[in-house]
Image (cartoon, rainbow, N blue to C red; front, side):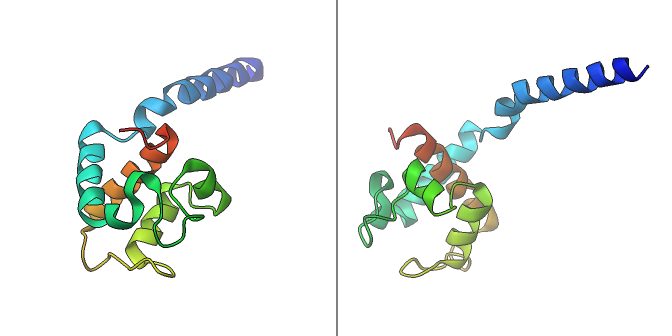
Length: 115
């Protein structure tokens, strides 16, 4: 019986790994909202994933990873609370807008900031 359970557990784990991209990716609506929020609030300093204040701390995937900012939680925290020269947006954007812009930034970084 334990062999059957072990095989079933492995099958379920493999299935979940296979479908993860489907439920982990942001929807097109969320990304569109995130793009609008980004263009209205972030693009002045971060156009195309760059950083006009500190070029070495841009929004490119490798830099986000280097600074531990390559997760939704980290980006949401940064947008919400600000840090260094970046202002906090918790009083300017709703939680849904912050979530959407974080998903947009993470998606764009993974796509190499292609239009």
